[in-house]
Image (cartoon, rainbow, N blue to C red):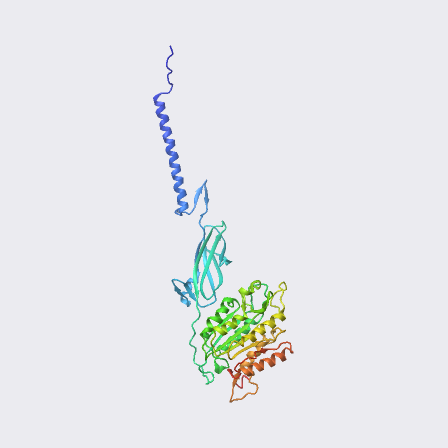
Length: 447
């Protein structure tokens, strides 16, 4: 007879084992819950400290740096107005962007418009600054900050560059010949170029500034008395292709038949090696490998005169055939460039009635500049300015004190030829233009 086996486990022991199992399960569930809550706080940014303790070590904040704009947001009292749809409205072509970045980690780099900004540590983070060029119309400025753990944050805002409103200048004495004819001008001078393959000039921007000063000087002081709001002045960084074309096609369209339009350009002129019959003026941002898209074609000036500039009298001063426009690693024939540029200037004069194009040199020549001309000018612009000051009125006549355009052209051509020992000849168009047009008032003192 087989007897039943008797269990050695007592009821009390079984109940103890069940309680132990339940306790272990409860502890495991609590642990999972705590870890989930901690992870959720960090992921959602709700952690009080912005960090998490793992194995006794603090892990840095996983979010990127914060970006705060100090400038131009603080410039509202200096002529900047806010427009909801378009952001801040400015009239300058260049603006300084300054701000502050903070983060749990050290900041590695801040970029404004994709270019690395100046960065310096402060007690409250890192301050950055960068100059930004603006085109006419809407602009978008982007800022990106990256810390040493490669965590990034971005911020962007809008700016709008407006055409400046003409200022109301003080009244100056005018003669009947000056009365009723408004003068509008585009004055462009480029000595510095963004592309390192384009050799810089020394005095092109200085020439343009000096011509601008002649324009705004009151008539009774030997200038032309042009309101500043009637002049678009573009020097170096401001002289981008977009801004130059805007000056010709948008700004100068304010002219009417009774007005006088003056275009002054000092800088490099060249032809596209692949298209040697097409001449260009080089803008600050010209890429010589893409001249068609980034330079200003001479034919665009011709277009502007034909379609946009309605002034009855138009004068183009071009000091544009400087030698050695590009580096030695780019093939270019200066002779072909000068010849083609001058041919287009001659063609421009045929675009309408009373148009004079006056260039610094003839075909097969290049324009000279140096410190011996007024401390630093191109020889063409130096004598142009000297003539406007009164020296073009060689036989001073108190009954006719005006520096007339014909006298000015003759004076400049004669002196450029003499002072360069016939190496350079200023050249004017042969079309119809007004030789009697008064440009300034000569006095015995200015003679």
